[in-house]
Length: 331
Image (tube, rainbow, N blue to C red; front, side, top):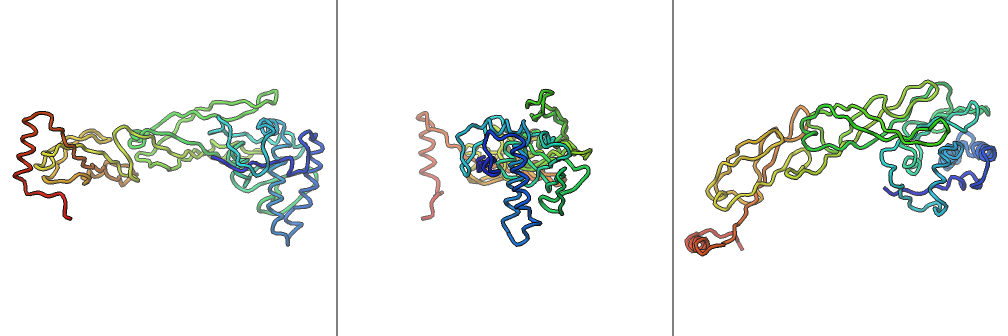
């Protein structure tokens, strides 16, 4: 995923060597200047206010600032930013460190760049500040008391068999935490997930209370696992239908046959009607994905022509060509 790089120092009008006090002064000055409640006739004020809050949320916190600065000095505002390796499925715990006494920010509606570095942010932003700021609802609305933690998202890879059968599965996720000395650290968290039988590719499974922790005593957010079904060596997927390519010899296709085929629920015998053509599909009901109403397994006919590897075989093919009235072309 490529997103637009944000120059947080430029947004606050501060240098990269600015102290926390200098950053705080720059933020408060700009926040008051561009607060939407103070600029009701300026449609761009809310956007600028959101960008200022996002920049300060990162730079006020030594850990987040350190991670942001680790990207290097070669990025420019507006450039496409490719996240470094290892940022997949990372969630950052927002603790408001570095914001000063009485100050706490619950990030929401931030840019894709912010979410790439620090994890998805959900819901509206809530802010309380010892400076005496107050305001209404919406983005930048100010409130006091507990706030719910933000939701997080990760990818859950399943084999086709796991998706078909469902059941319990243990998964491990990487999340970023803070060591006692204040430095960032990666932590492995193991969770047990109940997979619904027949879950489809792209579906989301919600784990209540497993997202980012709440603030001020608020409850934790939820974790959403997006299902990705891995490629299978035998079967393919067409939406919720399972597809199997069935090779047939020409005489099986011409004369008809009973063929044993695999499904995700064991082998079954199917009847191939005489004269079937390559590419035609036979249906086995209820052997696909889905919830209470299962989709089907489709068996796609693939006629395989053997080589005439002996004189006898060639003579038989030539005799068939001479005696048959069949023509595959109509033009």
